[in-house]
Image 1 (cartoon, rainbow, N blue to C red):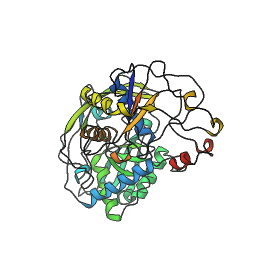
Image 2 (cartoon, helix red, strand yellow):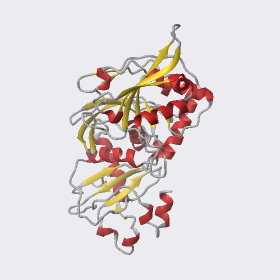
Image 3 (cartoon, rainbow, N blue to C red):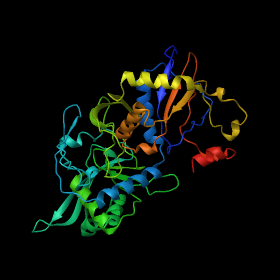
Image 4 (spheres, helix red, strand yellow):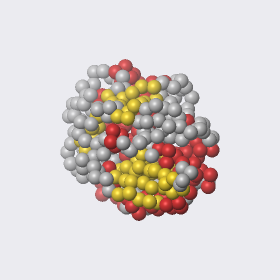
Length: 397
C-alpha cells in the first residue's frame, strides 16, 4: 500500500515477529509477482499471516503473566450460554469473563456451538475438549471428565475420566490431555500448546508455571468454560470449519484483557465477519476490519518514505542483488499517540488475532508498480541457511 494515489498498484500489510521488523528470506528462485488486489484485502491477509509468524515464547510469557494477574484479582462466578446462528454468528450473554477478572463465559458443548468448530476434514493441530465435573451426592465436584474431538474432526473420538487428581493438579490434567490427544511436547522445533475459550481467550499454556492457588483457579476456569479449544503451537487461529463458513466476531480498540493489561484510550467496539475461502491452506477474508478513509490515511503517510525493498540473503546467495527476487517498494509506519488511526488499527489487529499489540511489528506498507514482484518465498528463516548473516541469526534466536 503506497501513499501516492497515482501509483498503479498498491499493497499493504502489517506483520508481526516479536515486535521487530524483518524482510522474509527468499526461497527458491521461482518467478511470481503481485497481482492488483484491493488494498484492504491485502492488509487483512497480511494481518492473519502475522498470527502465524509471531514468536510464540514471547506471546506465552505475556499471556501467562496476564492470566496470573487476572486470577490474582479474583472475580465472581459467571454463566452464559453461547449460541450460533445459521451463519456462524456468536451470540453471548456476557455476565462475566476471564478477561474481566472472573471466570470465563460458559460455552456448552451443544450441537449449535460445536458447529462453529467441527470440520468435515481434519484440522491438524486444533482440538475441542468438553469438560465436566464428577459430582458426589452433595453435588460437590470430586473428579474431572472430558470428551474430545481430535483435530476438530466430525467424529466424537473419546471420553476420558481424568479422576480426582486432575481436579486439583494442573500438571496431571495436562498429562492426561497429552496422552489422550497425542499432543506434541515442546521442543526446539515445537512451540508449546495452549488452551483457549471458544472466543480465543487464553486460559493456560503447556509451560505456564503457576502457584497452587492459580492452578486451582485455572482448573475452575476450564470447568466453567466447559468447551475448550487446544491450539498446538500456542497461538489462536479462527478455525475454518468449511469453505463458505462465516462467523462474526467482536473487535475492540482496546484489546480485552486482565486488569492492568489494557492500554489507555476510549474503548470502541465493532464487529467483523470472517469467511472461509480455503481450508488447505487456511485462507479467510475479513469484512468490516478497515475503512476506506483509513486506507487513504496510511497511503498518504507512507508515500514519502517508500523505498525499494531488501531481502535477507541465504549463504548461497551472498553478493546477489535483492532485485533478483524482489522489485517492490516498502516502508514501516510507527504508531504513537500522535497517530490515532495507526494505533486504532494495531489494537484492532490484536483483537482480531487474539495476540497482544506489543508482539506486532509496525504497520508495513508495500507498493507494487507495473511488472514489479516478490518471488515465492517462505516467511521464516532456517538458521542453517544463514550462518554468514549475524543479523538474521540474532533475529531468530
